[in-house]
Length: 294
Image (cartoon, rainbow, N blue to C red):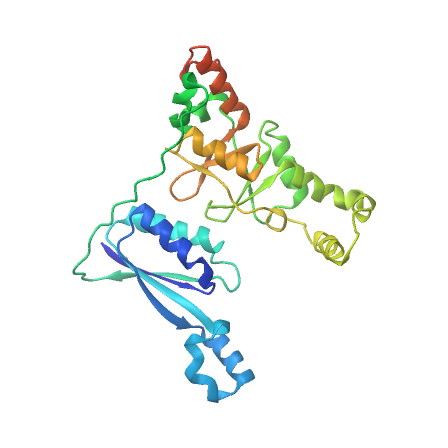
């Protein structure tokens, strides 16, 4: 079956990221069209007058992009949609855009694009006996401590997020998911504690207000009531990726752990720094990751 995927992006700045990730996963060639939202156009024209209608498609206030791609692989289509959702932060957000899938009765000239091969060459490790660790699949690491991820919905109240994290005391990062189970954000333990204790001990946070910007941040914090309000952007490691990639993302984002996701960004596991350290120690002692004591 052949399908036509149409993605209308309200934020044109995310277009390069979308095209890059689609290229990496092997999406066939895409078509990009300039477009404009009708409601936005009407609002803008009412402000500047109909005489400026010839500038409609070059005006930043109403400018959008429509990206079109044809698929005859259902799995690739599902992955492309998931990537688009991730890039825009979810099409359920206001002014994010829209994604449509239409059946195609006949298509000519389709071709397959191969996923891009990584070009980066890593420098040699300082410890040659640990060189194998870089390419160890995260799937093997996930089985070391067999940690069950903490998963909450975006509408979960913060106190219920805390209860969910108490049920998994070794997991210090909660995965916030949409209704379809797709990862949309992370909530780290220290950030959750700050948000909860803000409502318990607001005087501690009042002491930090020294200027207007911090005063506005304080006011914004009073409205943080759910996981969606408090979450940070999603960071993850995919099944099939390596220890090197897992550590890089934890280190760059100052996170003690990461959710393990499948190709559609459904959370299927959790990996923390302790597991990475455990792998280092066991490899140094000549033990493989499969020999961890349960």
